[in-house]
Image (cartoon, rainbow over all chains, first blue to last red; front, side, top):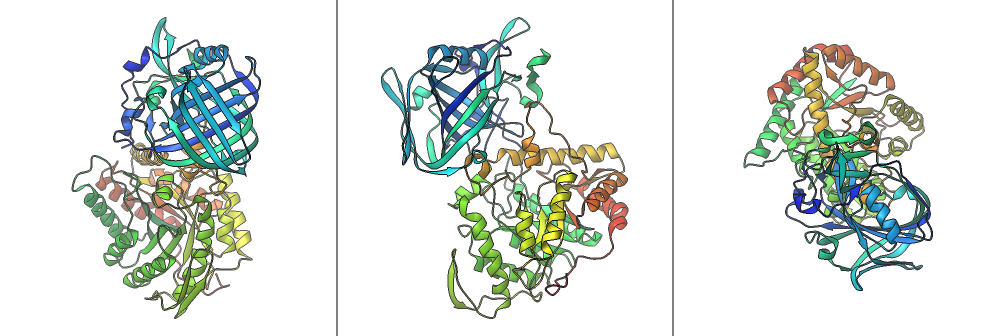
Length: 251
Length: 370
């Protein structure tokens, strides 16, 4: 039978952002995006995602890093650790945690889209032979990841599935745990792919020590315009998404 | 129209010592019945590492059992991954020839290249290379069958002059097919004179365009073998019952479970930025539907489920699109009882099949004649 998530979300709920569902969308032009994927080897795949979601075979983590020279909140960099998942038959990525170097934007990302986010210093540098990313927290490195030997591909070759973010949302006057579906649109200007290289990854700092990277999968680097759409769907994390999904506009 | 069974041999958890044996025995019982009822083909996939979804990693062995227990149904060995990390083309030619002999000349050979990350990475294959290696496989296999001794100096593999044995019973060689999921593969099939083995149910308009394109191109093909196989088959879910609601309900159980289990596997396209895999392979039509995770998977128009009349109507629509036949996924993960599956096949054969049957599955014909 399809694998179903069994992650106990209770320890995570207190730290989940409180989201106000509104019509806000965020459009950012000219964003550099590095995505690096690794398979993880874990005995209990089901325990990695909440019951609303389904794990994939095999589970794969992605380091997804944005760098924008400007936005309504000024320049920023955002680094996310995500895990491949399914919502029914649809590809999704479950957000483990994120870092952002722009506090004003981080507040908005948490409050409108449920990004579990903390301050961090993020460097994303593109060279002709590689793209390097480092993330530091309180002065200490928590991630060093690279794309090596880039070669051009097209934007159609790169995929970023919608994010699924554990948050707290007011329903019927009560704050309840909900998974917020974060849909983004990408207009690609260029894209490269290359070999992934992971030099340092502090699992504890990112929030799930079970996600030990195993097999390198792929790395891509793209330049595109990004629009994070307003939240359209949320779902109850404790039951399958096919049963526990609400359309925000119906609430 | 021709009709076949499409066997994934999926094995639901929890796995016991008997789980796989039961699935294989049920499948063999279905094949024996299909043979009696006049189905044209039984196809067995080749998949590796796809837990629950398909435990059919030795399809030639399974099909040998099918052949030994039947007398007329053709055995479809496919889709064989034409990827050298999985197997050498020599071994494909040899094993397929054995199967053709064992079956008394009933082999159909389906070729492909895998589309899932677990399989490609499990064998250490380079996804960028699979189109190229498939091309070389399909060029050399018919030569290996037809030439007494064969040598090759190619891009993917080379070999000195050797006799590749045994030779298949069918002369000049068994019909060859290619699995079509990615856009444009129907063109690859047509250009090489290969039959088109559709694996993704899609919409009528899209399918009609593909079939028309295939028919046009194959008129001027340069066949890789000694003859052209110009048949186009599609795939569908079969559930036929006098009680239409029960037929649809059970059919949707099979279809939904297939969709869920297929979706759970990481496709190559999903994790690799490569234009070698322009589609996600399994059920891209379902996957592409954006929207809520709570939306039920929409059922396709043209699914072969319901009463015999419902099923016949759907088949007629596919026939109008231009397909020569349909391979049915009639069971998956044992979600419907074996007796229901057998009854559905019997009713289909009694009530529906005669409306579409004009002959038996075609045998190989000389190049340029088909």
